[in-house]
Image (cartoon, rainbow, N blue to C red; front, side):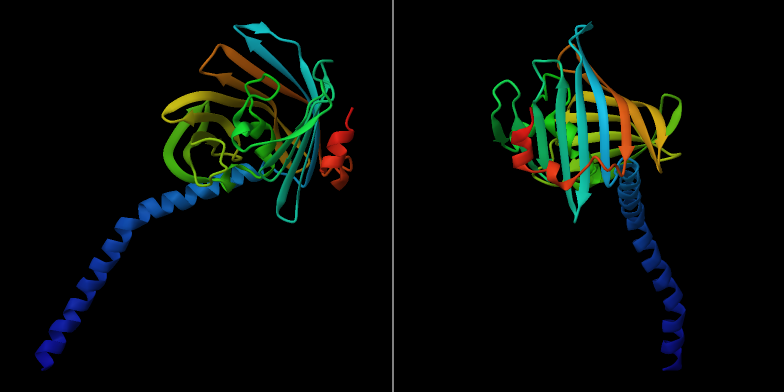
Length: 264
């Protein structure tokens, strides 16, 4: 009897070792997934703010030829777990008075040319906004952050514009996610998005690069964004003119259908 006890005691370290080995075999993927989620969340936090006001201009280049510059005001906020954004075009004249309102996943557009307001379907959020290479979703989903609707997987390391980056794959985890897949490059220092590749199926349809990072309050924000379309010879450049974090200009009353319809 004592012999059996002795043998069992000797087996315990071996069994523990085997159990640890088996568990460890599953840790790399789990740890990688967790770190990928954390990397993306930290990059999202760098862009999110409670009440953000901005003015910007967008220039579309078709086959290298610049189109009339579009100017707009932007308002965004998060309140009680919901994200809100409003973009109002102020120039050129053909676009003046056009505005996009997003509340969570719902999108309304006021058309300056007709004065009419229409709620768009979820699929319409993928459409071009104002003839640019940015979709309605690209312009309005920033308040929520990418991590809300995608599952992240760390692909490894890469270098973008001389900076060491994490390369992360994002697969749609929500039916309202505007893209099936994205691959993002996030700096190891500062957790800043430097490039985002957008996919439909297995095709990289467009890529956004972010430049000219400046410190505004506690955030480091890109003041220039370039979206290159890979399906046609078109590139859109967005330049931020003014950016205010925690701005008093961003008020709850702006994010209503009534206010949207009153815009001129």
